[in-house]
Length: 475
Ligand code: NAD
Image 1 (cartoon, rainbow, N blue to C red):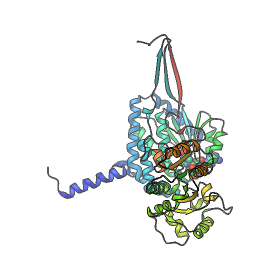
Image 2 (cartoon, protein in one colour):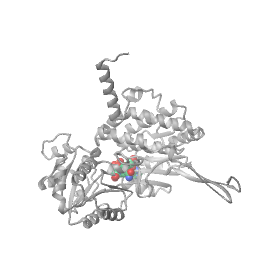
Image 3 (cartoon, rainbow, N blue to C red):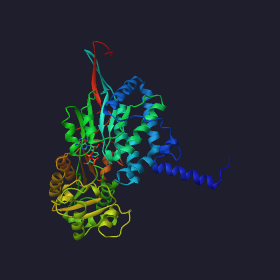
Image 4 (cartoon, protein in one colour):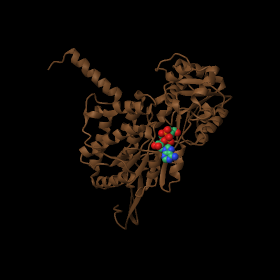
């Protein structure tokens, strides 16, 4: 067989496209229309209906062989890889937040690096008194309340983790991301059914509201609630009377000391802080840089493409992105492109611009608030100890995420102990802590208030012990 040059080129192009996006170039999941939805799989108008259907499905699911469940989860991952393009674009267009090209990366991360059944390793101990087996068992059906900032990522990540642990799940998504959330659930259910699994294992509310979220938290038949969002939903879940896993807000500080590789620190900070226009809870929200290297760090940020706002522009920006109280964030600007924010200030800019930076004092609302937009405040500190102290204060005790750029082991050690966050990233963009370019599995439900950190199927399981007296110590 002989291949002409054009055919080879086209094959290479296709392979490269697959490699870059992680999606096969052809496949039925490539478009939302490409597969037979066959009704509304898993979509319900009432919490009661959704919970009942998920319970039925869960009974059938745990009746299936583990090998078949593993196969189905692998098929779900493949289908989602194909669907990533439209899913990411729709998430961006429906919510108006972030950048679809970044959402593709985030979705791919959860598709590939959310742990499945393999993380549920059972444990055996034997001795003079016999044998004890410890296993991870399902809760049954879990209620999951998901955010607008990572809508599909959270459904995929929680969804895979929860069903890997043998559970069913009912989602109440953020109302402003309901359509893409529903489509993601329909797709996953369709894959499950096509491969011999039960329908409605993942269920979702057709018209989600805050009220339906509250109802889900109190629904009979659910033993565990998992919430991913801001302070209000966390508070509500903790008052629900049920066991909850709560993933709440953060305000991740970055400390840059005089020993840091300043080129790398600037590049990594720009990459992290601009990811999906800063809407991700773990990304860099403010920088504390030691005065001796401040100018060089700021220059490096500019060299990597950040736009530095003048004092006057910063003053005018406060009027735009903060509410009238001069403190809280104006939601209208959350997740918008840096270019559009700059244009609002009357400065011509295109949408390739990824980040605005500004030098402000510690008390500034841009520092103290989780802005969730590509505006990064930089604060000068007289020395590394003061920088760490400010970082700890600006993190507000959320215990969420922190970053440090330093080559001084004592400084890194001091910050790690002082800031006490679920994720602490050293010398990398924050998202390395999610396994994106860093080691380890991923999670988009980072439960700092309740302490689980990066949640997995293990956290969505009950631990059970089975004891056998006097037997099976066979050595
Ligand atoms: P949000 O709190 O507005 O909404 C999250 C979910 O909670 C939505 O489904 C919403 O409908 C529901 N909700 C909100 N208030 C509620 C209440 N009083 N009772 C019941 N349900 C309620 O948050 P968002 O804007 O979607 O997401 C951004 C916030 O979430 C940021 O603060 C971000 O840091 C945080 N977040 C944290 C994590 C994490 O893993 N820790 C992940 C993503 C987002």
